[in-house]
Length: 189
Image 1 (cartoon, one colour):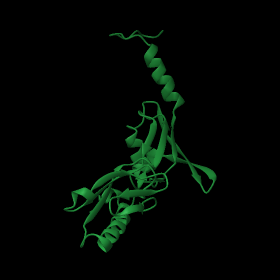
Image 2 (image 1 turned 180 degrees about the vertical axis):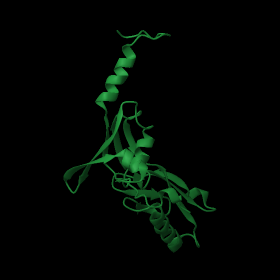
Image 3 (image 1 turned 135 degrees about the horizontal axis):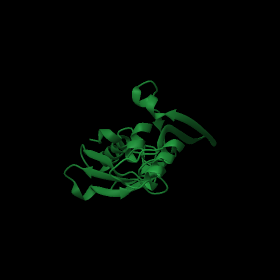
Image 4 (image 1 turned 120 degrees about the horizontal axis):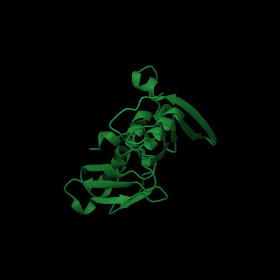
């Protein structure tokens, strides 16, 4: 049985998949998807994996092993490492970086993966996307998304999410850093 979390995930090159065949441990393997999109397993040989879900690969392996070698094989495939589909998160987040996508993912989920906003973050987020050779951008207000007044957009492989910072918040944070720490207030004259 595939993990429901990655049921819609399409396998890509360099992903690592775990294949287990019930009661046949010698056929159970952890393999990395080759650059040409295939995995190679004992008895089954080379199987196309790129662009397929784990469930699709399970069906292909079950068919191939059942045709020549095993009677009613029970094959399970799940993603062990997500290496092919990534999103870049940059700007005013606590942990900017490149993160793997593990199936359908929204903007708020990606921001949470990057440990959320910094103290100087603005609610404005831009998503840059390449689609059919064309680069496009869209701006989103996270406050509107959180309140339910705007839809939380889907993030796709290759997106770049940039969280803007507030100049006013940055100025305030800089002021707090340079002010001395005291236990009393001095009246301004």
